[in-house]
Image (cartoon, rainbow, N blue to C red):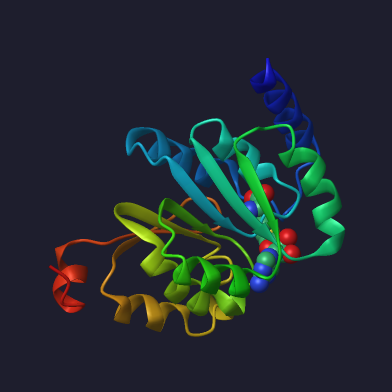
Length: 187
Ligand SMILES: C[S@@+](CC[C@H](N)C(=O)[O-])C[C@H]1O[C@@H](n2cnc3c(N)ncnc32)[C@H](O)[C@@H]1O
């Protein structure tokens, strides 16, 4: 029954879709990875009003999502409450990611979809939070290519293996592969 409520809310939000929402083809691709990769714990940087978080909650065991804007938080709280496996953190992602690093929290899937010029820093703070067999997804890498600050340089230097997919607004998927562990002298 709760899933029915979530599905109904997703449908309602879909009918009012704005440019802030992740595009459907990118969303479905991430959801497919979550399902097939058995990615239990998902971390999202940039909730907005909870459209993507509600979708992820259908396929993941637990979704942690971070939003800092008080105006969006009002609606995000209402929407995320519909699902019992979403934790909405109302704070600046920089503070939360730093705290998660101290607490050595780990996630199977991390979705970066917040302030574009900060993507490089979000990525560097996310890498230690990623389970070895997990994946980081980064949205808007084509639509906002020139607005992403140091992101592409940080990604290249990180040792992650990655691919930019021509779906939605441009989606990068990045993994820790042997190259990453050798470069960072882990194992
Ligand atoms: C493109 S929207 C996210 C859309 C959402 N992922 C979806 O597809 O439904 C980006 C959101 O990130 C939030 N944001 C930007 N920088 C942030 C930060 N440093 N910490 C937390 N939230 C941030 C913005 O307020 C905005 O609501």
